Image (cartoon, rainbow, N blue to C red; front, side):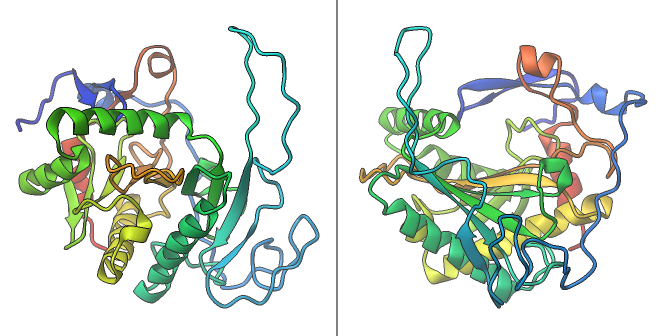
Length: 338
């Protein structure tokens, strides 16, 4: 595909939305907010950290002296098993009870090891925990959706510097997942094939937005990306969820996560902030053959370690807008040493 240097719109088939691509905005003068430079924790153990082994958390609970990945129930959970009182329903004012559980996953006992900096063995262990928790929590009778995610860095709202992720499991399928599910279903009914199988295969062939690929996963800057260095990790075969991955595919997922996060860090020479999460089939007992395992990465940085992309104004009132083409973003990530 020809790289477009003038403003144009691109269609996102996963959300049925458009994004405005305006490459000339990337060179406009910047006298706006300058962020502080993100820093990686420099010590293996921090006695003041709420998540380090043996330390007391803010709730008063004490962490065990864990040696691998450590999972525990979030002390300040957004979802619980206590139903709220049902309000009066009307067309304009509706409420619905939402049951759920929230967990924290400390990736390792090391305060200074992120998914980008840990070795393959530790990273593969994290993937194994993701698989286990998706299967375990998803088996609860009231859980229909399991959201595994990580917010890396204070810029993305991480309240603790110790590298960790989260699992939120709930009774409803949330809005973004529901939208993707509908679009995947429509494509399957229309074409008798999988949207993301076709998309991953085509991106690997074109290589214009491909950051990295191994035998089981492709890492791309999506054609329709809204954030400057947004990325997706896509299974190259039709796996519906993490549980369906074979052993070598789990290792390949850990490899893909490691390559992407290391290239992010190398881009501006800092621990790259992002929010990431997996989208996979719901745990409501249905087959959901339309679903295809993938992970979204949404990093905020735009020009440097100190200048971020703001989704404001036009983006909030009209539609998402990006300041450099996905092809240019992919090119910069392709050529980063890691």
